[in-house]
Image (cartoon, rainbow, N blue to C red; front, side):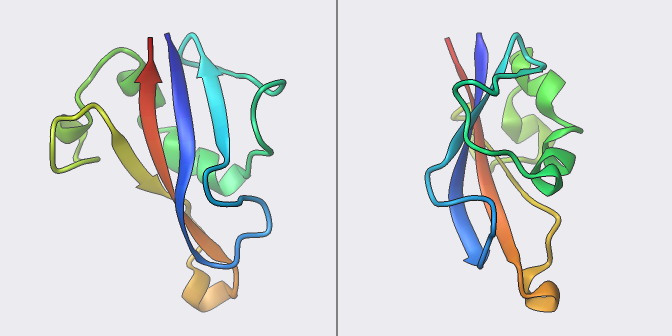
Length: 97
């Protein structure tokens, strides 16, 4: 099982990510640097509270990360683009069997 994290939306300008960039966590906690895009530390901070639960099959809706129970979670990075001139990135997180 691996966790797939995809860039779904960018508000402002992100110097790291482009739309549809993807990175992967193997076995729930190993960042696959070989097959992943560059990874921003701001986005990792947003993923950290949830990655273990999501990798163990907890429904994202139970964690408040989606309104539906379709197995997809959404988080955003910590960059407040309106204040910094950077980019706030919306990330989609799901499990791949």
